[in-house]
Structure formats: C-alpha cells, structure tokens
Length: 161
Image 1 (cartoon, rainbow, N blue to C red):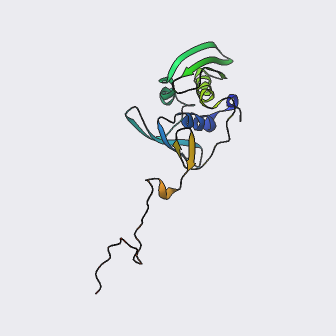
Image 2 (image 1 turned 60 degrees about the horizontal axis):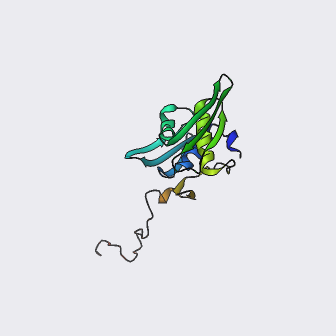
Image 3 (image 1 turned 120 degrees about the vertical axis):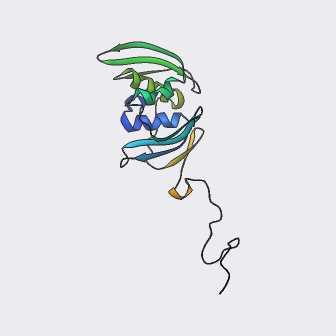
C-alpha cells in the first residue's frame, strides 16, 4: 500500500505504528473502524481512540516531533509539505487534501518509506519498529502460572474436610 494513498483508519494505524516511542499497544474499536492505543507520551498516559487524520488535537503528538516542516503549497486542491521528524530516517515529502493529512503521510514515510503493508486488524504490541499480535489474555502481561482448580504446583487449596 502506498503511503501517498493512506486515509482514515489506515493512516491512523500507520501513524500509531510510527510512534513506537509512545505507543505500547494498538487495538481497534467501533467494530474495527477506529484505531485505539495504549501508551505514554512524555508523561501523558493515553488509553483510547487515536484519530490524528480527523483531529488536530490528536495529530499534535506528531506535530510535537517535527524538526523541520516546509509547506510547499496549500490551497483548495490540497497541500504539499516536506518534513523531517524526530526518530525518522530523514526528510519526506507528502501530499494530502489538507496540511494535516500531508504531514501525517510525511511522518509515516519518514519512518517506513513510500510503501507499507496492509493494516493488521488484530490487537498488537509494539516493540520498537516491530509488531507482535497479542491475545486478550496477555494484554495485562504474560501470566506464566495460572492457578487451576485441579491442583497445580504452587496452588494453595482449601484444606480437606
């Protein structure tokens, strides 16, 4: 999938993937139509919807990581920008129907290049630039020794009657 074509949920997902210093976990809400994240951005916890493509308030987490932002063009046809970001691989140029969309596409391109994979619509944990799918049971952390009613080693059972 070309970064230049990312919109909506796909753009939100790849922006979240690019924020590997902030996002710990990505999951989907609203029947898979909304990206949600868990993480901590510079001391501010975040647990919920993540929609930078629809809101400057959310896109501010990307704007705070800008080292250089050159707006080449902005008019009724859209915007073109060249941006360099903290943690990125150099400057990236992007177009969009608004300056926000162009900046977000430049952010993703600066981290992953011009082409990205399809959206992985499963709950996942980020570990740097890599992602690992996780199940509902492991969201709170890995549980190594769950107690069982049939008496597993380490279980404290009630005394016999």
